[in-house]
Amino acid sequence: MPELPEVETVRRGLNQLTLNQEITGGDVLLKRTIAYPFSVDEFLTGIKGSAISTWHRRGKYLLAELTPSPSLPHSVRLSAHGEALTPSSSSSPSSPSSPSSPLNGGLGVHLRMTGQLLWLHQDEPLHKHTRVRLFFRDQRELRFVDQRTFGQMWWVPPGVPPESIITSLARLAVDPFSPEFTVEYLALKVRNRRRPIKTALLDQSVVAGLGNIYADEALFLSGVLPETLCIDLQPEQIERLRSSIIQVLEASIQAGGTTFSNFLNVKGINGNYGGVAWVYNRAGEPCRVCGTAIARTRLAGRSSHYCVQCQR
Image (tube, rainbow, N blue to C red; front, top):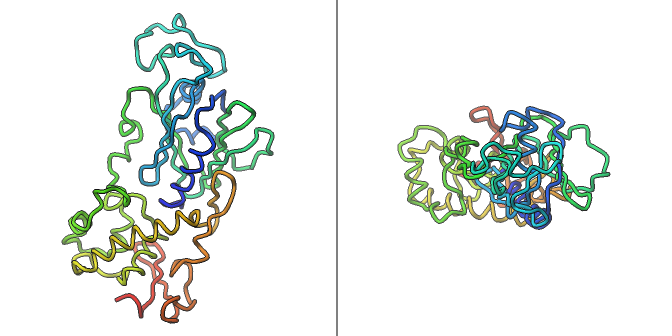
């Protein structure tokens, strides 16, 4: 599953390639990919005639701000079929979600296990796992490809908080790159918990965006065994762990994320962090620090990789 570095890599690519260009249409090939609205036509109507002003990341979620396209009058939006909608087309022109209102809603995306957002020419052959196509001017498109079909997209109407549509956003903890992610914050989150620290780090209500790969990597860098109970962590271990989380996420972002199976950036390029990973997916290989064979176990149904010599 794409984790914070992969999603951040995608966000940066989208901000380089997709901004301030009119969305002229779309095609939904798998209806259940659209989590909101429940009507595909309403989803396409909501985004057509708009432009993306910027992409944000919250945990593993991507959120785009939509504004009226510079090429369209602010009072004009497009129907699901591409026709212009004018104020007379709406029974309530003053409503913020009516077709005649300026478009300033949002677009949410979660890649889940195998989702990819690819920026392509519209004449590129369709991958068999293509689920949604968003068409832009100049014959470009943003294509959502998802083999396992767990990925989702949302249109957030104007004036509506994203958390009321993408309800899991409200349960997210602070981001590791937030000033709020302090040693004191992490200590408070794990204090008195009788569960392994590895399991706690995968909990998005503890820290947002961290997943199996980077939890293993951060625990190695901090010298903490994944099976260590939260309640047994010493203050210096928590301090090292917070620092290690940030360090490993920054390193992976610089490497363009990790590709072990499906992850590609928006240009279709693999991430390179896997080649320098400390422990993840390296069971039986020598530790890069001490040479001891990397061990592998399972915690809460997930693989955990660690060095018995470097982690205590």
